[in-house]
Picture 1 (cartoon, rainbow, N blue to C red):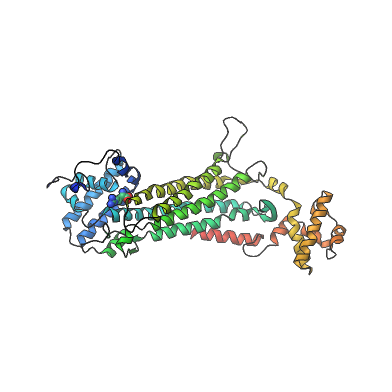
Picture 2 (cartoon, rainbow, N blue to C red):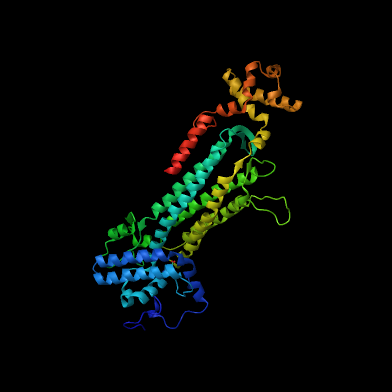
Length: 463
Ligand code: ARG
């Protein structure tokens, strides 16, 4: 039994006889995973010591001894890391080191606090920190796409539906398309950060704190915007983590689709885009190979981002009200999502920033049938109902196919043979720039619409 001046052997040893079963020990340990919360644990602990001081539970000199002791623990961990400590978790480790640094006063730090409200607080502090960094990385990728788009304003390429050529678009329009989902992803990440800004500390293990801690002051001290309203909810609420993992899964899905386009468009069959050597890899067997691994790995990694979200929701769904040890499993999932995105986002941003359009290859792929809708629209402008013009142009396409020629190779007489509303000026339709420029609505492909879109994307990324 621990007497005066002797630290307790474990955080909860008092009521137990004998040690933990050997098979239970490794299952019980979480230090390998939660060690990365050490800074957050110290920040939360310092604030808790100050809160106990304001509540007159601790004397001023005790608060000072604790906060200075925690400063020294922080310096020690910063210098040497957690290394090979055998403590159960990061909370036990910090408390043990504090005992070494500050002596018996350390035994008072856990007054009115539980690891349940402590770990929830640590995690929220962590989400707020990494969420901001993640949002920044998403922004960087968005900026890279905008810069690539700027090089594609004069390039008209096929716009695809069903992966079949549909209508001409500007390459800039294609490069800007994924910027918008990324901006929404960033909003979602920021939403998770905001959700994390509610303070659970002061909830104790389940029922709240018996000492008159000013939780609003504690929240302000830690930079939280509010305090939780129900201790039972607070210690098991991981919605903010689910928000982050959902934002991460959706980001991953968007990155995967960017990646898929890059794989496709960098292939010999398309060759619309060339990835820089720095983001390509070779083959150990085929000397000529230049593989878009950056995109394939991005696409592959998106699976685990979805898996982490699924894992967390599955973990949470059957828990009875209050803290349950299952919750310990939340961290490896959350850390993996952030680590995966930390890996993927800079690589993909670099690949996009150094990618180049290949205008000559794009131009060679433009099929004259991309003008079919423009022909139908021409007839509409001459008063032909769209359903009839659609039908007429369908026959024109068949005629050109039968003759083995392009739409632009047909004469006015050929076209008039199918519909008499065609005139000589119809040949103006067969112009790629004109076609793209004909769609001038906001969000369309005209030069001015795409320029406005690009300016809006830049402004949104800066916001
Ligand atoms: N390592 C635990 C976790 O991550 C800390 C909380 C432990 N609480 C408890 N009552 N055993 O959830």
